[in-house]
Length: 78
Ligand SMILES: [Zn+2]
Image (cartoon, rainbow, N blue to C red):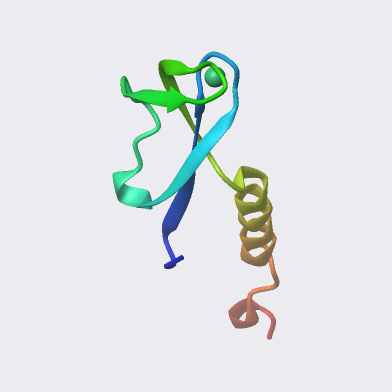
């Protein structure tokens, strides 16, 4: 997976079954959809629900970079 890509999980809007994933450029991310997706559990086309994979992992990364921004600035340490 290339840097800057996100993995989107597609699941059934009725039963919540995970039906597939696809990678998408962060800039082109589309979580809102009116697409229908075939659910083998419901045996029908249901409303597709999309969510980001690894959302908690990206939050940890954001917290990590926040801490790095607060590190002592070498310019002002003299
Ligand atoms: Zn279903």
